[in-house]
Amino acid sequence: MHTYNESRKSKRVKTRLRVNCKSDGIFFSDFTRDVGLGGMGIETATLIREGTNVELFLHLPDEKDPLILKGKVIWSQAKDTREKSASNVVIGIQFDNLQPEFHSKLHNFIKNNTHDD
Image 1: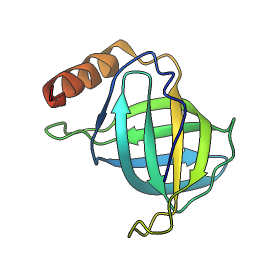
Image 2: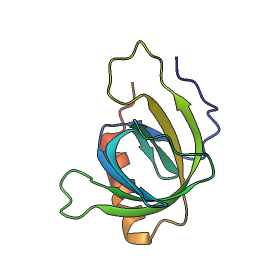
Image 3: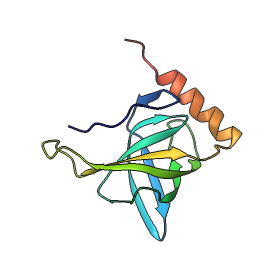
Image 4: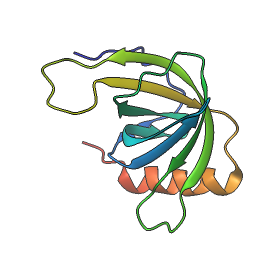
């Protein structure tokens, strides 16, 4: 089972959104596992080393253009092999200085998709 340290400063919502990632000549397109104002988890088949800087293009519903976000891979782990998925790695991205416009759009998305159980 995938586990990681829950030391986040901001809440994340579980959501599956298309995200394109660019780093050091690598470009891939996958889906988020969760998203927050501080970062996101991405399910991927592409292994990226911890500490790698990335540029992300996050596609929010009802937004014509993707949010362009910069961040750093802060952890990377293999998924449980019993999970049925083409992606076998989960990476954790921490955002660097969100632009105010993108921060606002991401904040609204999170607020509208947070469900108190």
